[in-house]
Image (cartoon, rainbow, N blue to C red):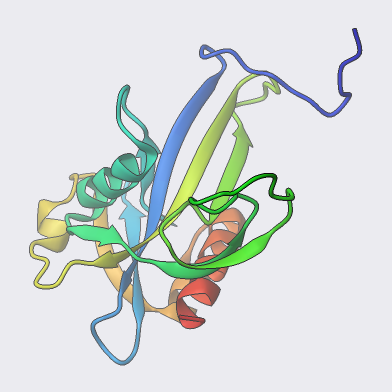
Length: 179
């Protein structure tokens, strides 16, 4: 039996599924984005973490934002391209990217090898979120290892410690700016 040379399969012992969300404050004319400062390593990051058993991906993303930033948020709908068929799919739909308005689907996925092993991976599903109206506590309600802070969009890109996070944030900004 033939197999595709580009296929890799992982058992549940070999992967961890994480979810994150780019948290925007869209309530002011000058949009801003929330980053978290991880004190132990002096790193600026995007909020993300492991999905719990039985938890949906979008629930995990919003929970991680709440735990790491202290802010309540909701998924923010954007117009974006996806290869997924429409919800009301009729017959065969070609597997090609199409634009849909008002989606709250993941806009990006990151596949990261864990340690030095190519046999263990972390999969991170990325969402776009907006601060809930009247959202409270902020860093006061966040995990003690983190401090959350909102930055103007351009400053946030520069502040992030890792290029991969910058790439995710730049894509999120482009989707929010196009709305």
